[in-house]
Length: 218
Image 1 (cartoon, rainbow, N blue to C red):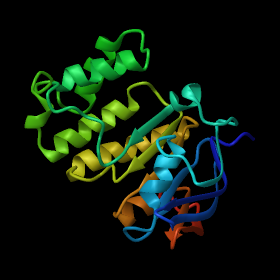
Image 2 (cartoon, one colour; image 1 turned 45 degrees about the vertical axis):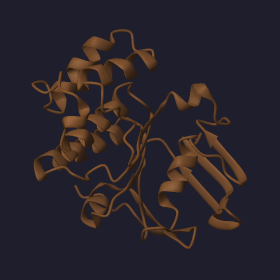
Image 3 (cartoon, rainbow, N blue to C red; image 1 turned 180 degrees about the vertical axis):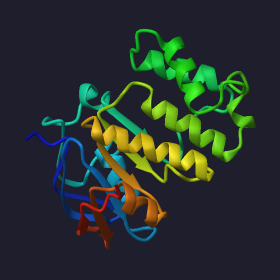
Image 4 (spheres, rainbow, N blue to C red; image 1 turned 90 degrees about the vertical axis):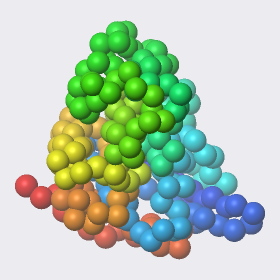
């Protein structure tokens, strides 16, 4: 089986200080991997490397069985702290912009569908800079999922969401896994990680340690 993501001896250093050290990792289709660990242990850095947003200092990365490139990156949905949102665009303009960037055939229809799914239809023509944290988070999630990626890299996706919105996102994550996508999930909500993940790994001092398998709740 070809892995969606495979890392071989990946390391990353800043100013001669190693953030990641010889990380080996494999994510197969249908897996939802919970990535845990204390702040500052390299979790977000690892996600950025998987997304092709940062190059490792050592080791190799494969996405969908090949070295990272425009084609493989176009199959990734990334949610990082920055959100990749522009305050002077409206929510609708944001999704239209990314829809065209991703080459979606009918970006306006996709934008309208996602505005409805994230319950921002009435706010679709408001500027993003006026949004609350939770509204921005929902929009960032829609941006990441708009082009139907096969790999989701999610850094604290539940941050700013209320219970109902969190449960809806959790349902989507399960559906993506059941559809054969791969998901890597970082969250401080240990209960949510345990309920969603098929595997859990922990980052400690820049290295990965397997914590558990088959932890997903029925």
